[in-house]
Length: 503
Ligand code: TRP
Image (cartoon, rainbow, N blue to C red; front, side, top):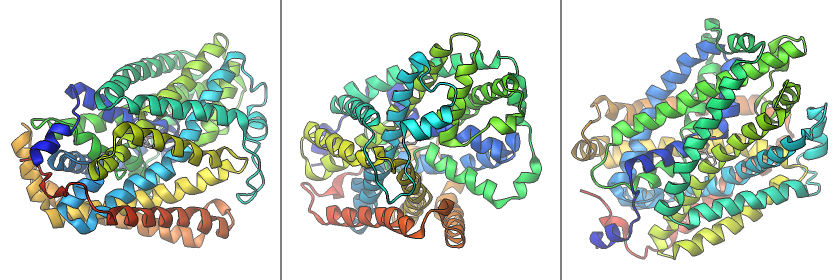
């Protein structure tokens, strides 16, 4: 029977194909707009200390765990946990369901905004006041999360295009779709970002901006919040706790390089962030000089950075502003798409593993439901909803799922067994200390993160939103996805997962 499963499982055509797809999943919108801002806010260059500590302590070990598990079990997240222990299958479903019917719904709307702004770059439609343009004319943000308002048709159109692209890529399968798309996307993305950064660094005032970005303020390291930001960013940026890396690794051939690849994926992702930060701050430095303001006055966070500060800077450029805008928003679209297709694949492979439904039908249904589900975020209240759902799913969903993930693999399956598997299939093996990291250190660190987030939550409702909206929109999103996961895991398998393991 396991022969049959092996036979049906798609495989990456090449190791580079797998690496690019995993890097494509990891590098996303978060690298370009979230990392530079976090770095600036949390002590500039000094932030690299907690960031790289988080990478080494949690990021890489967990990446090895996810890739090792998917490879060993030859299955998506639900199939992999079910093989370890039937009672934990729900966790795999929960991960891919809350990412698929939570994170990706708003994430695809942000990609859609980038697509709109790509076209707006043609004639710099945002004019002299990008702030008013973005919030009042483009999003038409309402006054509270409860006033859903109208659906914004320009966003709806580009959202349809985003879901069509998602569908088109994933529909064609692992090798012909995902592998091929990432083989084009990733080199193009690296080229674009390199071009943009070099261009920005030559602008007058760029040095000033870069200085603000990297100037270390070591006193910030005493602040617990800075460390929490670093650890949560590592999670989101490396796509850990999403069930994605498990599914991607299940398409690897038996002989593979789990440790080397995990290190390569993680470092490429993090260096990309640091590098993109230079470009972002060079542009802000230029803008500060052009408007005779200090850099600190022109920096804004996440969404404001990409859709307000950048358009402002683009309009100020002495030449080729339109092209710069198109390159910038084009890169965001590519970075976003290569991440969103990864969860579609992780979800599809979960359903295929369990129910053996035809893949193309699943992908098509999934993309239509995904599109319909994202529409809520294109309404005038969309920005509030996005903010709330993002907060709950990334601060709680991902962290809780990863704690269980470590405990299941570390204690129930036994970290040692997975380490042995990696030793047998790869040239480089995992040091023994990894067992302790997976069983004790990572869960502990994550529990501290979680408790801290909870304390903050109760002392101050997130961003001052009405408590009721947080409870209804945020918490319920977690609970409904959990209920959905429990229902799916209660259904019976077409072929029992007990014989999945690869020897
Ligand atoms: N790593 C991505 C980033 O930094 C986020 C991401 C990865 C993601 N996979 C995803 C988001 C799937 C939504 C769906 O932006």
